[in-house]
Image (cartoon, rainbow over all chains, first blue to last red; front, top):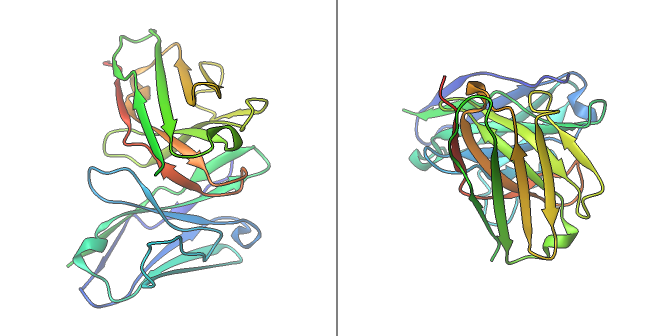
Length: 108
Length: 120
């Protein structure tokens, strides 16, 4: 089955830029979505279709997808961005939705 | 405003059954696919099941296939998850989640979740 691999943790100082990656075979051919999950809360969609930002999501959140890696970038990181971030795709070969293992973003 | 509210969670012994329900409101329920996604304590997200807008197509994660059944009642704006043969590894918060559009689309709205506990 299709596997998405994320770095377990990323740390960044306030005001700096955080980059969270999601690796998968031939990722560039799939639509990647990103979710933010703050402690004790349900996930929230922050990026859809590789790079689209839903209404209400700050412009500080952006993303790209190419070849075997999708990347979520958060600029001017704030304390409120501290959360777990998950990438997700649809695997058409197995008809499964697939999540990455998640990346814990810590704001120092 | 869209609302999804799960119910039916609780403690069940291994091998037992439980039925989760999700009540939807604030959107045209009968034109969207619906999902269940779970999260074991301290772990990541795991997709469990998807049902198409009209119930004609159903997909399951490998760990639950053959034990769990997803269904929906568009007249009542509800989606159900019948869980049989429960195992300790099924212990998780179960989220009811709405598709934005198709199977390749994102999951654009999540309920608060309901906790299922299967003690070992």
